[in-house]
Image (tube, rainbow over all chains, first blue to last red; front, side):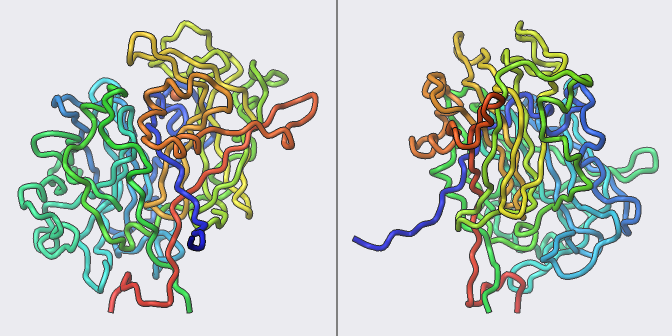
Length: 206
Length: 242
Ligand SMILES: [Fe+2]
């Protein structure tokens, strides 16, 4: 016999199901209940840095867009600081760095407006390239999927990024790089997510 | 001095795998490649924080938060309460818990739900609350009904409440479902059974809690939630560098 380790076990995950909007985005489910829905404003009015939009679709193993996905974004500000008490540094008043969006019921498109994050100090003093952390839940996804959005105009920083470099297959690295474009004078990055099959997005066990 | 460090690795054998063919929708929505394991950086050990000005104190009362003045939702009145802990058994304070559910007839207030059970005009079906200093949360609601869904021809979800919990870091983010003691549909549910281990499945079943029941008023169920625990060490963990 040995002494008993008295750790608890994490509560098992279950799918968010088809009606996730009721709980996390009730306006989209078709009713008004809260004075304030959370997660629609990631950066706030005072954030410094470049204003950008990020858009995409989430594609299943058949190649079809998924129309009942909820995505959450978590990012640093333009100086590479997270709005969190343990991260050294200050963020702008009103900068939260967290957002929540759903895919359109008809088209499967999602998108959010924010500022482009700065480089964040990674482990062992290695700077990470600018990135937005994503968490993806939906009907049929048993445990929320984590990935990162990097930016294609940051080639040098991306090449030195310790997380991108963990990906053995260079071809798969490309799945994490959003493509910069412009529409109506606004910077729009495209980031499509493939859950399965050819060019499946890299997902992380964080 | 002890420093807070990384969160314990998620036990992927305790959670459901991505591909679970008896829950058919997972088949085309499950990654085939292995997840890439990351040592945590600031991006993973931080996460959004919420305060009392984000929510309304009545948001956790689903019997009333969508009801007309003087009205209340129809159904078996229940309290769902419990503690949010980490794997070290420490309370997770001031964290946001969000809930959503079908009404007592098993119908969701959602434009995509077409089940023939009626909408309750006084029931929205969502609530949210911040845990207190001991990690406690409480909702008042009605017990949701079972409902049919398209998996096999004759598949019924056990009564359940969906729960979303944040914790203090993005790596603790969790969505789960809470079931109710004694429901014979639990053991038959392909979504419950995506979880391979019986002890893990049992962790999702709220216990009837007579001590918390309000006599002549409301029945109570207790559902504790455990988020990933966190390492604290005197040894260098090299999270921030040098
Ligand atoms: Fe449900």
